[in-house]
Length: 151
Image 1 (cartoon, rainbow, N blue to C red):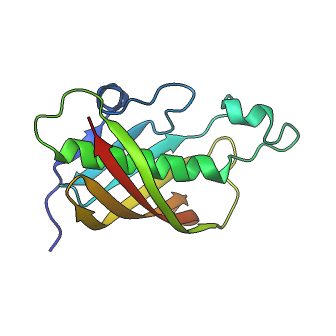
Image 2: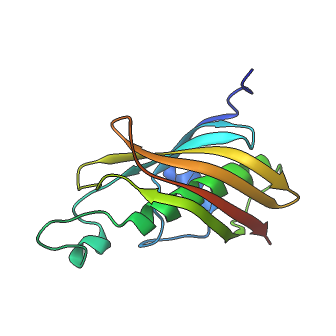
Image 3: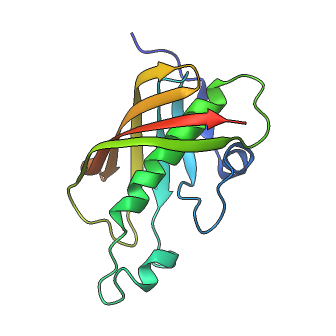
């Protein structure tokens, strides 16, 4: 049985209070359906105004895969930080690992990317998640990511 939804909709204002990331490197717009520290879905609305499109690629803009992996990590960070009660200030979230990374389809301006993260392990302040980036229900990228919270 799945755990109950703890946070149904984490908006951008809450994300800004939770993560230390800022423009141009805040790569999620909201997080929905967080179940304890187990799972959640990050949302990224990709627009042609993304700074990465100036060089990737001006003639045919494709959202960089590495930014999708970072979006997965930021989603995992929100899930992890909000699961720690009493957290009110941005905490440092450090990448530990990226494994089994695959890019399956290009993401273009106008796409909405959903980062589906499911926890696969936890040890003290370290979390490991399996992430799938989806556009219109189809997997466009996937990876296993690990992160650590620090003050």
